[in-house]
Image (cartoon, rainbow, N blue to C red; front, side):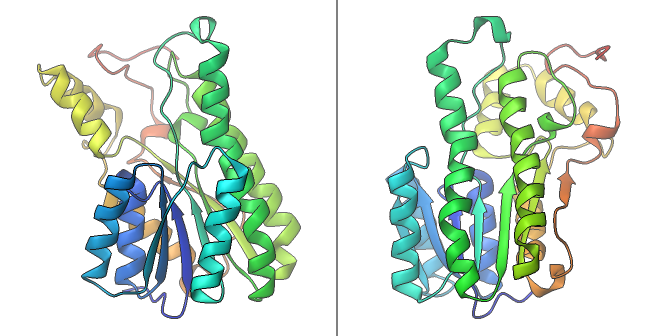
Length: 267
């Protein structure tokens, strides 16, 4: 198992899905964890699960779209644990599934605030703490959508693509201070949200299409993204900087299949 002993990590969107899986993986690897989510109920549930592993955990209700709440999260973490070594900017909203011409300014602003501004705020306010600690690891969660198109998701892909560029810039600028910045681009992962969409489909066709999109013939597990994040946060990933890890089962190297169509698109 990768070792995160004596490391302190912040994970946003920790109440469910990828954030929860990353938090659990970090805790099992020995990290002290600071959990952030806007949903108090799911946030508390994740904290309870980690408390069964160890007691070095706090949770802070956080709306990541607001800079002052990100600052509060980071300052609370530093006050509790005395340092910060790792941040995972994971929280996001999946707004899309329809043409960009139909997107309201309200939805656009909400998407950018949660999916992109939050990453900027997280990096901006954690870097001084990483500098103080002598280095650290920034992990930003992007998406396969940043690499390959799918109709109806232009705005979402734009935000995730910007994360890739921001991550590389930070990696270059702060690498000399032993601060590493990397991203993860997941494919379709069996999170609570995806499982709900599949259940609502009711026909089984959507799940078949999701599987066809990935050359491995299945959708991913949250734990697989968690394991990748743990590697990047650990000393095992100490020479990895400015990279994007596509945890996507090969999704981004093959022609797309539109979910619900059962046939290949010509994108």
